[in-house]
Image (cartoon, rainbow, N blue to C red; front, side):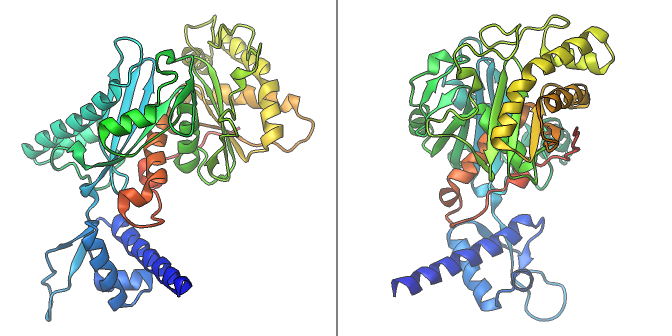
Length: 420
């Protein structure tokens, strides 16, 4: 009896997911007949599913179509604006926040600089700033027929689709929040160690923010979230096993295996800088990269791409120094692709070529993964944080079991892979 009941519940959930996915992917309402044809479910079954989704507040009926003879067909739309999911990237220089509707479309975005050491109070402020940005855009839209809203939306980096920001964003509609922090983050959301945000070390970040925001909060390492976002919707899309290498103020590595962030028993997977005495390069100082030809790595990369001989020489020497460590990771993991973020995507080939060549010189076997330029840029962490919240709390967000996270919309990006 219990087995039969469980099978019926699983079938019912699967039917709900099938119908909801059709509605979520549609820009216009869909009738029962269209849903029946698209899902292969009978019309009575679709009617029953829609009743469940109506009760859950996930769909709503629209004005019946009146064209043609006979009784008007009932049509339904995905009520994507009834809930919100957010992601926040908090670092030593400030916070970046994104707010998505239930379909994964971006409806609010903001960046706040930090006036001092990183503080948790910056997270709710960043969320409110993202909501206010959407409010300002919607007010402009209301007075201009929407042209300015579309311009602002595009400037803020919106990825298209119908937006739910036709009115001010109410943060009381938040259903889950994902947070990205630099450092070692425990499974319960406590920051165990961090060179970038030492003032937050030891704090139960997830617990504190969940209490303040009143919604479930999931916290993870920022580089791991960037790797996840690139694997789900960036340069690693289509690959299950990805090594992500970020070359910024410091060097960071994260690994995604079988589509899941590799954490390790003590959440230390990829933390190569935790090895005592380990230095990526000779000019690294307390983990920070120091450059001679230009002030920052991104500027060195841009100069090298433009043909500057000194920058090219420094970049080539840098790649030769880090190649043995990268080769070791590749031999341990044997990934399908290595995604590298080091500066502007347009300049990426100036880094990928010498890095791939230097790593190749370290390997005996000819088999090696391609090196691809990261596609999501500086937003990778905040996108990964939002997607991680969808992943972790899907049932709470939708009230439907096993509804897939909308990664395609969260990370929607015209990916042009630069590979070597």
